[in-house]
Length: 203
Image (cartoon, rainbow, N blue to C red; front, side):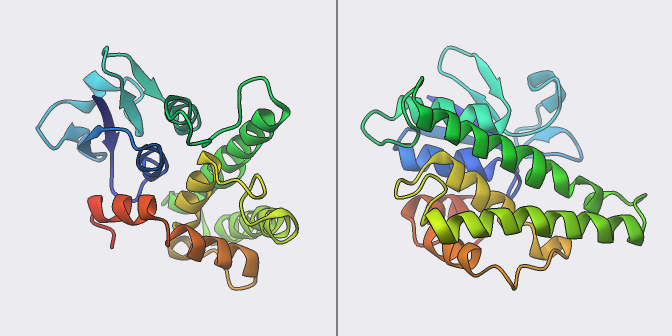
């Protein structure tokens, strides 16, 4: 069985949603990221050398890190679900482009907002930059939606939703993004999302 190491509401929510969409059996292992301990008391640094989540352990013991890679692995195990386009297709590279954009421009882009050492001026600039990046996604969804790949839901949508959930708490203004608001509402109607939120105690 697959084993997902996670922390509630963190970036592990994206593969959690993907696993539900795929209909795969999995075990959840909660991680205290400050203490670097699993809920069972194991040293998480001994499990994941980089010390962060998500981490997906396969049935043979192989461990996959990096959310963008994990969700693609999950999608490729879900035959008939079409959670990612076929390898080698133009559409697959579009998916990877969105996963990379979310990872680098949105996900990692929130980092300075979590740093105590970053001053107000820096955080203001970061919020403005994030708003511009979110504007790109909002425009795309308005013109080409309802999902990032158009009519087809994909694992990139789960990642976008995951990162979007952080923005209000980080002070990023979301009020002007009507297409993103509609996207968030659609995501929260999906059974996979409702289950993941429930399992992580986020409802």
